[in-house]
Length: 184
Image 1 (cartoon, rainbow, N blue to C red):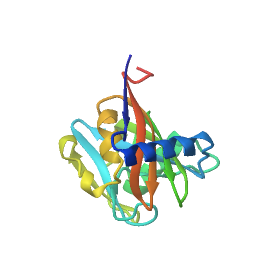
Image 2: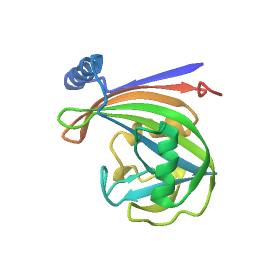
Image 3: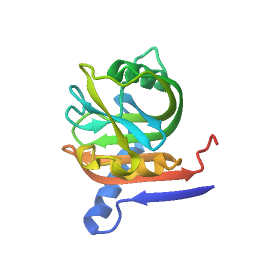
Image 4: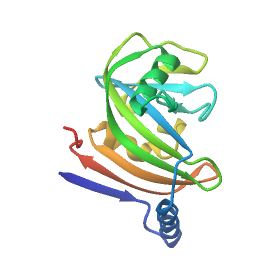
């Protein structure tokens, strides 16, 4: 099993931020648990432009907050249906991410990939869907951390990571991408 570790080490400032992230994780508890569902169709990826709520205006995958009576995969499937009208048939959990914000809510994210789905994506009050070629994902319109963990995940590696944000800006990160996926 191949494990690759990525972190924001290098300069004295980056090292200090990485140490700050590690200290914060020692007693970290999420306030919110959320999901993302990346629907894949060959070399295309279904993404959305979020119209409202957390991440409004950004490109991301369908997803949302886990309700008390549902599992993360149930949440991701429900949110995908609500946001773009696509029913996911089968999904695989491919990432577990901790979003550590200095002055905002703490999020634990479960990320899924699905290649079996039913329906045609449609615009809703929540989101505008787009198919993007995997080699043309618009990272400049997404969350800063996406460009770090999304490529290894789309390459079939399971990602576990933590990302420290200050005022919505990524200041440190640390994650591991395991190949092959532990369930494969």
